[in-house]
Length: 118
Image (spheres, rainbow, N blue to C red):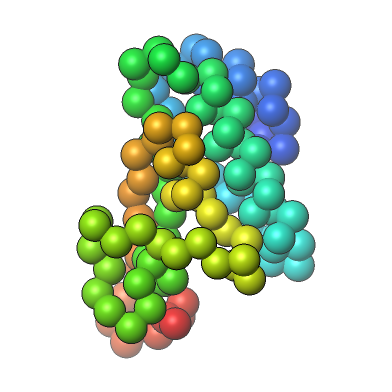
């Protein structure tokens, strides 16, 4: 087992080098420094992607659906827009390093839950 940290690029490099593939599902949920942790996420994706480049090993990043297609149903054919006012760009960063993306629902709590809906 390897302990790592999204803010520790060396642990990300070591883990990616040892892995048969990587699913990046981590995010620092400190919304008091949202823009900063979005940058940490971007750097983590770039770091892992650099290690896996050309290896043939899979890399998957997680993204969201909340802002993928405002006002219409989101499908796999619709890329989330680049929004300068919204610093989270996991899927777009993943695209630059050849990663696949899995879009997560903004809420998974249950019937009647409206948390996270835009």
